Amino acid sequence: MIIFYYLFRTISFFVARLPFPLIYILSDLTGFILHYIIRYRRKIILSNLRRTFPEKSSREIRRIMYLYYRNLADLIFEVIKLEHISKETINKRFTFNGLNILQKAFSEGKSVIVSIGHCGNWEWMGTALGIDLPVKGFAIVKPLSEKHFHHYLEKLRHRLNPGSTIDFQHTYRNLVKNQKLMVTFNVFAADQTPTRSDVNYWSMFLGQDTPFYNGIEKIARSLDFTVVFMDIYRVGRGRYNGDIHLVTDHPKSTGEFEITENYIRHLESAIIQRPDNWLWSHRRWKFERISSRDSAF
Image (tube, rainbow, N blue to C red):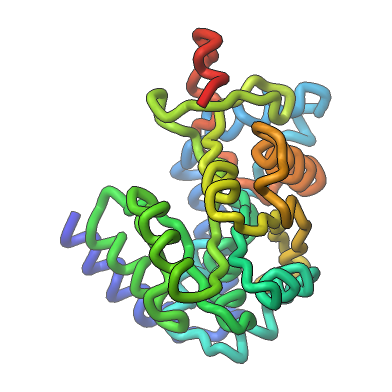
């Protein structure tokens, strides 16, 4: 693995310095290899798409899958590009709608949770938002199992926004500490599959009974953070929008699971609108509900 890592870093060093037209030529080639030669997680992707869109024809499913592999390849190369991209380029290629919602919260002295799904280019989003906003931002991240690649990815995330990640295992402790010092925005991707022991809420999502973390809701209600959802999507190759929607600016007055359900419905709508834009290659429905206790905190 260490040999593979250093080979990758040698290649990525040069790739990061290529102009975008050449990067997307390489991305097209990589997408073809992932789709037709390696067939990367093809069975998982097909299974997820078919069970989510039973009404779609095989041709429509294949079209979504083709676009998914293309988007995945673009994401890989765009993340590599973070090693050499400038703030000016990121700002030109990533725009936000609804920043006034965040600015209103900041003006009231309130920190914000920015809830997202694994849609579009979430890595560029974190970098771009950190550049655009006047307050310090943090992304809640789960370390990769391979430490060299984890350190590489962290280096990319911190290049334009130093000290901008929090290990998910220490989320609450760090947010409490930060709240005493400053106003912040905090990015949570809450669409991952929880471990069986961490399942604490189930909801119908894309037509299927699905487990979710409800950590966003717990933190927001405990610390009185404004919560927004951001829909991240491509408007052109290497160009993205982030549409910001208010979930709540009074979390303490919300009902149980209200914030979590609001997040789920926003995410579901975004995926249905742009089905090739979500991360279909993860096993989102590997657990089934086994008892009523799974629906409780």
